[in-house]
Length: 180
Image (cartoon, rainbow, N blue to C red; front, side):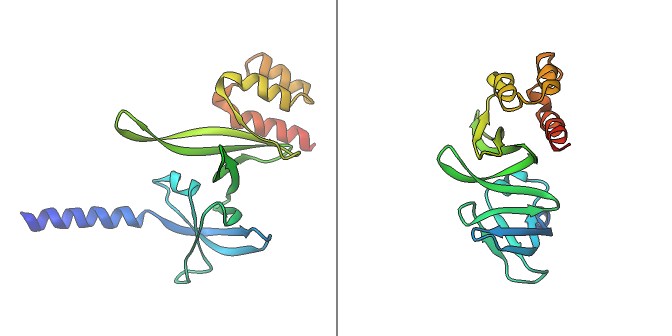
């Protein structure tokens, strides 16, 4: 019986480790150099992507792990994570929309009723470089200020066509119209 339990636990442990794999990607160093190769990604635990980037040039190659203070950004399977200062700490944030006003998601682990949960916050960054948290209670006011040059978007916000729940759709629509 003990052997069966150990075998099951070992199989589960191997399966857990097997979930993280390397995918095509790149790392941008602080000096601007780009290292192309493969970046580790765990589809079952996205939070890991917000804390570090594990890079290798090719399968079997040396693995280098970078934290947000060591690189500017990294990309894995077309998803870009950028190093930004959030509440005094350098972290990776996932870029959800790119353009005149970029949209980012940050994730933090929080303890809720003796259970660790992952909480997402959203940030926007204008071309001027201002990086600010989007608060759900002040969402409309903050976004209207940032996108005031687009009457259509402002009107849609006032008519509640865009809300905090479809924030990515809003930023994509704004950035698409700003690029035309």
